[in-house]
Amino acid sequence: MSADEKARAMEFCAESIDDRMEDGMAEEDAVAALGDVEDVARGLLADRPLGAVVRERVRHESNAGRVVLLICASPLLLTLFAVGLSVYAALWAAMVSVYAAVASLLVAGAGCALGGVALMFMQGAAPGLCVCGAGLVSFALGLLLIDPVKTAGKGLWKLTKAFGRGCKRLIVGKRRNG
Image (cartoon, rainbow, N blue to C red; front, side, top):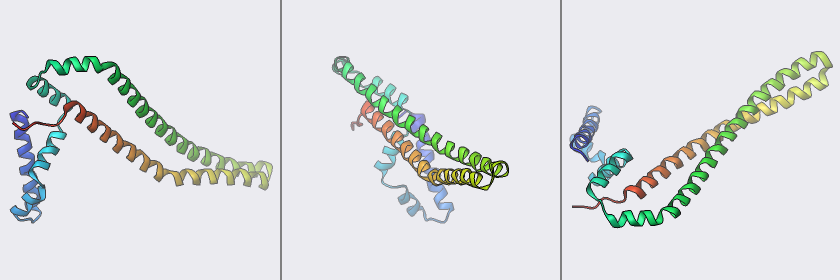
């Protein structure tokens, strides 16, 4: 980390301790609530932008063998990257489709129910009630699907973040001591 990043990290930890002490914790308890020093450091390093980490690694660890290996393995790596990106795009496309389906159930159901009411006055009670009932069933199905779809969207977002962290770990690797 640069000196500036280290200062910001120290300030963040100090503010966290101060906030806990303002909430009534003793200083020792506030420090203990932060967790293990290595876990805090690992979390702070994980939150750094990927570009900054890569620039630092390139500056400190240029290795010709790694470059040659990367060039030789690039066809396989690019293929794996393309497959991973395709799967990722397909998951998000499916999620967008599911959101669109739920929205269409809600809109079509409401419209159909209102159309059924109008049809009752024009064609009679039986056809109007059938159309109105179908619209209400469609609308109710849309309402029932809102929460599961939101949960699936949140899960896909968590998967996306985990995938990004995993890619970052592959690029950055583990820090060596010393």
